[in-house]
Amino acid sequence: MSQNDLLQDQDNSSAEGQPGGRPLLIYLHGFLSSPQSYKCQVLKQWLRESRPDIVFYAPLISPYPAEAAMALGNMLKDFKAHQRGPIGLVGSSMGGFWSTWLAEQHQLPAVVVNPAVAPSRFMPKYLGQDLKPYSGEMHTYRLQASDVDNMRQLESAIPEALTGRYWLLAQREDETLDCREAEQFYRGQRQTVEDGGDHSFQGFARYAGALVDFLFPNN
Image: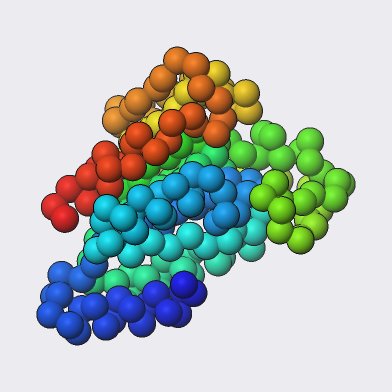
């Protein structure tokens, strides 16, 4: 479903006797991943089977920070202009950063899964390389030093005292990111940190129902 189709669907659902509108869950994937990622597809399938009232949307996110920020910012502005129901965010890895960036601007709830809290720190090792998505899409990217600078600016826009409502899901054996940084970053927020696991967050499907309840407690 495209963003335009989804906006039309939201308008129609409100017009068809649902004054509150349908909840909208936006899933944001990680760096060099895509909406075809495992967790995204698991959540999409669970919602289709268990909560068909919730509209699901997962955009393809550019690895270029300035481009991604503009697209995601415009996306959420459009949704808020049309969306009658509540909006919730789920983000994995780099998508956890983007979920937080959006949640702070719009005071939205977000579930962040093994999130990147300072992506600019790991981006330099990718500079000058031809990068291809892990999920097989036929795209090639090449990051520049300016992309790292852009990411640092985006990171600085997130306040130390978070204003959104978050649930951190993390596993201690994440081989890519140190979950202790996420625990500190999301201090004071709901946290579930498991021993073992890995960066993919093993057993993610176990939390599908609970994260929906967290995002949409009144629906």
